[in-house]
Image (cartoon, rainbow, N blue to C red; front, side, top):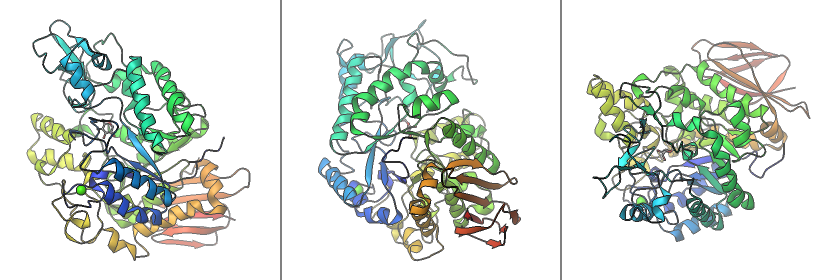
Length: 560
Ligand code: GLC
Ligand code: CA
């Protein structure tokens, strides 16, 4: 495998609105991030992904961008950004931005000009499509509920619509128009010239469309079908766009790019993330996909540990075969907290967090840690729909009520599956509002902040935070680095509820074992040969070649 500068690194996702507020307005900001760079450095982070910080009306929390070449005033200024870049660089940390170019905001000047003049150049940046038989052009349902079609503002009496796969305030950009593509390359280059190391690329499969806009067979009683179904049908067209994007922007800058790409198959992994792929890597979103194969929260299944591990291991094998690098994750800003989502209830705690971290950090690929994951943040106990901000949760709440659920049941669903679990403020200390802000936080604070916070964990050698620090340091250990980065992955099937795999360096013969027990009952495992403990957490006993793990115990061993 050809070596790349980002191989073997550890990445961290910041959700800027909820990370650290420097001026008491209740919203995290760039000076706040700068004030925490030493914290990230001490954790061992190499690459920082910032969720969108561009000007935005925040209908979808910044994923609706109204100006691609600026900073939202609530986050700071371009000068603050330059300072962040400088300070991060001084600490050896690379910054990547969120590239959201499937859609912009309906407040973007392009969309405003387009609506004002349907014959303008900007009108061609969007999908302005005639209705069919007095109705919308087709029966696609947007990601956040309702039709993907909306009448064009100012043209409500005409039979013409614009497409939005996400909220109606997020009009889709028309990648089939070369002029639009030029605009995209220009904005990408703007940030690359500022020194960003690359991008996390948002919702990119949605840029391909069937330009005849056909109906698809309905997948629910509303007669509609999820817009994502259309992506798969048109995927063969995406190469032209993404190769051009890569050639014009990423390749000349040797950028690191990570795609938000769903339904990765044997064929598409090579195409998207292989040695000649469109992106450096893709997130492993397969556990979430298994859950979200159902159109509504109210049908989402609970994954068992084995199902979760099965998804992760299938992904590991898929990428390994394709000579590709995956980006393993436990959570992100679109998902509930991993500890609460993937582990049995008796591990919804600090031990569960350390176990999951152990499982994650030695997988093959470049791991992304989501803010708060390193201290073991769990889901927030949302009590009423008014405590949510996310538009997706609000839509799911309404449709669940319409389907006959009680208010209490509908809130419980949003609390279990909702994206706001990840978006509540970062817990820095036991001070008011967890030290996140001196003002009123934009979203409520987690119930346990008085005990579950960075300050409390700093000096506790057994805390999740210190465990993550050790895990990251271990990845960087020169004697292990090559095996962790390039070693072969092999699943180790032991028993239900046990998560275990090997990392094997075929060149040097080094063999690492990762093993974790989520069962209440202790696990006894016979090692094939003697081993040394590199890092353990919870109850772990090694006697000769007999390894015993208590409930929640996890270990990384090196065979002798
Ligand atoms: C991606 C983002 C999500 C956003 C959506 C629309 O899935 O991760 O937060 O709502 O795209 O931009
Ligand atoms: Ca602020």
